[in-house]
Structure formats: C-alpha cells, structure tokens
Image (cartoon, rainbow, N blue to C red):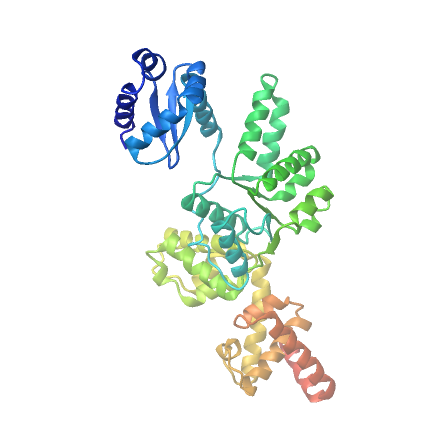
Length: 445
C-alpha cells in the first residue's frame, strides 16, 4: 500500500476545499504514516496543529479521505517527538525482552504414553487458547520426566501461531533478576521499570522449578504481585515444580492458594512402552546411521534398567552409541550393551541379575522359556509359574512392583499385586505349593 500516494491525492482534494493560507498552515506538512483496518495515523509538526485539526477539520478530513479510499477511518494525530519516543520505547522493549524458549522442544517431538498423555493434551489445549482456560496451569513431577520440554512446547506453539509475547524463565532467574535491583546503586528506577516490563508486559509467563522460590522469601512478595497483575489481565501463567502446590510448605499460603486456582497436572515416570519409544526416538537423533544394528534385546535391556526418568534413558543411549563409535563395533548386541553400561548401572545390575535368575530358574523348573514368562500368554501352565516368580521377587528379593512388572515383560504393577496376593492365598491352602516355592528360593539363594 502506497501511503504517500494516498496522502498526496488527499491533500490535493483538501487544497481545493480550503483557503491557501489555511492549507499552508494546517495541512501542507502533514504525513500519513500508518493505516490499519479502521484507523489512519497522521504525523504533524507541532502539538497545536494536532489540536486544531481535531477540533476544526475532523469532518472535512474524514469525508475527503473516504472519497479517496472508499472507506471510513478514524484519525489519530501524532507529533514528530511522539513518534520518536514510541520508536525508542519499542527498541528498548525489544532489547530487554528475550523469550527464553528453546525451539528444539515441540509437541511433535514430545513422546507421549500412558504416563504423560493427559499432560500433553492439557498443554496443547492451553497453547491453543492461552489465558482462557486452566489458568494458572501447574505441572508437577520428578526431575527428568519432561516438564521443561512440555513448557517449551507450549511456548513455541503460542509464538508460532500468534503474536503473543511468551517468557520462559526458571524461578532462580526470577529471583536473580529481582535481587539485582538492590545491587544497582544508580538509576534504580529505570531498573525497576525494566524488571516490571519484562515480567508484566507479556501475554504468557512460564516459571520452571518454582520450588526454588521457597528459599527466597523477599522475592515471594514480588512474584505474588506479578502473578496478580497478569492473572487480572487474563494473561496465561504456567508453573512447574517437583511437588504439588500443597507440598510447597515454605511458600506463602496466598501463593499456594493461587497456584490451585487453575488446573494441577502431574507427569509420572515412563512405563515400559514409553521407555521403548523414547529409546527409538533417541537412536534416530543420535545414531540414525547405526540404529538398525541395535538389537531389540538391547533396547529392552535399557528400558528395564533405566526406568526412573527420561534423562537417564537418553543418557544410556548416548553412552552406548559413543561406546560403539569409539570401539568401532559392527553391531550392538546385549553383551556389548552390558559392557558399555556397566559403570552407569551400579546397583541396578545386581537387582536385574537377581530377577533374571528367578525367571531362569522358574522357566527351567516348569519346562518353559524365559520368553514364555515375559509374554502376555495366559495359559495356566504359563500364568501360574509367572505368578510364582513375581511372588518370589516381591517377598524374597523385596523388589519394587514397577521393577518386577518391567522385568516380566512390561506388566502393570496391579498385575504384580494380583499375582502376589493370589500365591499368598494358595500357600495358605496348599502346603505342597509352599514347599515347592521354598525349594525354588533355596536354588535362588
């Protein structure tokens, strides 16, 4: 759109309607600098010129401009000084503001399973309509389960699909920014203004690891004020923590109450299927050229032994890939993986070896294969030995329910509970079965 040409045509028409001295005084040096759907912004030279055009020529300007454009516009007048000031403020804001988002974290590469699919769905809903639902959104779970990835995914989706301003920071960064105000000896008012613009002149605020705010009591007051300011304006707030709002005992009650205003969701440790999917995804990104040489039992070995969080799973994959590269391994089999991960497994390898021993002894005793016991087959000749194995792992080895379920082919912990309870009841009625299990335990040692 040629604003200069439009305005020249407009000025030519106005010149025909007013006296020459009036045109020279009030119109000649004006300029059209912006045109939106309903507003035309006109730059004038001095303040009294702006006032005079508004009060005395507004109708003439509207009618003439409609003749030129065919549309009705409102008019906004601004001086050279005001234009310069607005540009300085804009440049200052842009210089201060950095979103803090990492573009590599998106919904597309957020691998979901039973443990986190609800959190992903809620995150996407918030990203599509920030500020209108689930505000604040509070995400909690242990370290390494994907809370930060989900927050970045929400932020990146919003920035890529709207003109909204998103800020992601850790609570430590918020505390540091606030305390730095007291470390500045000069121009503190400007520093305070910059701080407030950074955290309040935005559409979405994301604070990661809010639990660290517990040790900064002075900063809690400022965060309370920031929270209220944003929430009152329907700006989206997203918070993450390793605990629920009610468990953040050292935070002020009024903060914990506000965290519960919206929706609180948790992210659980990944189940076996999700761990396998994470391993496949990591192999694609870390070793796309050798992923086809990684045996399936290697993936299962990683999934069974690194089952607490996503970071340790990905770390195990990176370790194996690096080891294979250095050793120039033609393929990555189970023996190679055990060797590569020996230092990282620590006590886990002992635990796994014990459960493996139980499974092998059970299989030999009942003329079955290890694969039979780990399968989903429900034939009595397989199901009962499997239940006996789970019972021994739970009562004799004192292994956790998720660990037992994982080693027996990715069974749910409720399946393990059912198996243990069933064998306990059978032993009370069948002394022969009790003697049989005691013999198996003796073999295990």
